[in-house]
Length: 141
Image: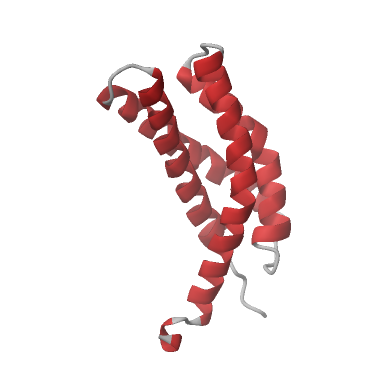
């Protein structure tokens, strides 16, 4: 079992754990904003979703840089890469949200479920891009 936990796998698992911890606060804040705007105030689902994510982008980058991937060298291009990764993850999120709304019947419970599935797609996509591209481990020279 110990042989299966290579340094690269250990790094991935620790990054995933820290990402999860940092993401709990960010997700709760963003999702609360989304549901408040979508269900509570009747905003368009896509607009509510976009506002919720906009609130968390800066906080998410700071937590990723300072806590999640703190042991990695951060290159000067990391903020641009992060914004690119966020844009791609958000596009995935919007596609999943659109598909979910096509597949589920109308209603508040189904709207919440659709938003929840979209949140998960965004989170997973952004973590993978952050781990393997934005904050990728730089071998010592």
